[in-house]
Image (cartoon, rainbow, N blue to C red; front, top):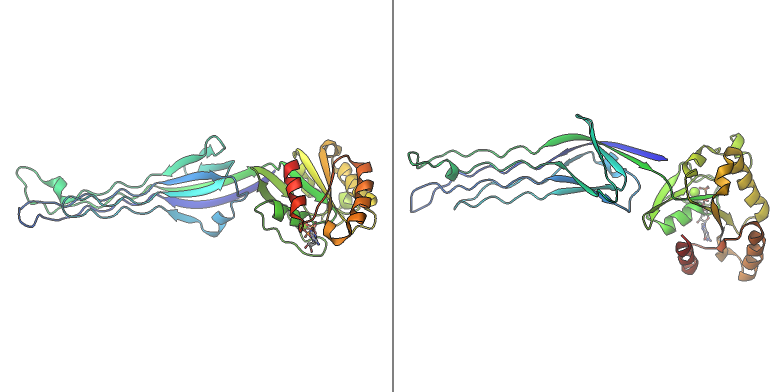
Length: 311
Ligand SMILES: Nc1nc2c(ncn2[C@@H]2O[C@H](COP(=O)(O)OP(=O)(O)OP(=O)(O)O)[C@@H](O)[C@H]2O)c(=O)[nH]1
Ligand SMILES: [Mg+2]
């Protein structure tokens, strides 16, 4: 499970102040009421998997209402503010410790109400008091300290040796922007992306001895324990694809044998680097290991489409 957390403060817009005004010819007050401040809502979005943006900006306020006008015109309402968070985010009102989990079914929650607009001087006219000069300020918007917690369980997991092209695939298939480079252990922490509402996890590469702590070790495997499908990436650059496949399988089995009972697709990656004939040869070898194998290249759009279909 991936956990992401952020603490922010949010505030509804303030109500606009009431206006003091008088009719020019006729005597009498005509100052309108202020507009209501905007509300703040959290709404879900399916194309984000982290709360990063709420660690960058941590204070939010909806628009204030505007001042009332003359001729009893009410001030314009402040616009509501909609803050998007990934589906499955828990929104906690920190002070009273009340929480709501946003899901596919509960996709929005009103979190702070905007303040009511103030009263214009028209509102203070009485039979005995015809020329009130009084107006009131708008109410302050409601203010809250919010903790956001996101717990995500990956649906698909990318595994393989370092440099096999896992992060590149994640970036191609999802909205993720994982770091990619032509050396092992580019990925130091798991990356996530969303494809058709499903979470795809890219974990750091495994090497022989990972289960005894070599490389980055196998601690990240806990993140893919609950996936329903593994995508095992093997690069065409591998000198012995069968051995490379077995190395990864062996390290995983030392961590938790159950992971290996999951459905797995072997992806022969970077197929653009060798001839089609050579790809066929390697696929033949992989077919002996697993029934579902797919040649793939981030430079071959058709192959990516085929993988998306399989997912
Ligand atoms: N030609 C070609 N190069 C690719 C392809 N996919 C990935 N690469 C390159 O392979 C190198 C490694 O890619 P990554 O996506 O960083 O590999 P990784 O498996 O995430 O590596 P680690 O994070 O170290 O485990 C990069 O230089 C990529 O540009 C492909 O389909 N074709
Ligand atoms: Mg990587």
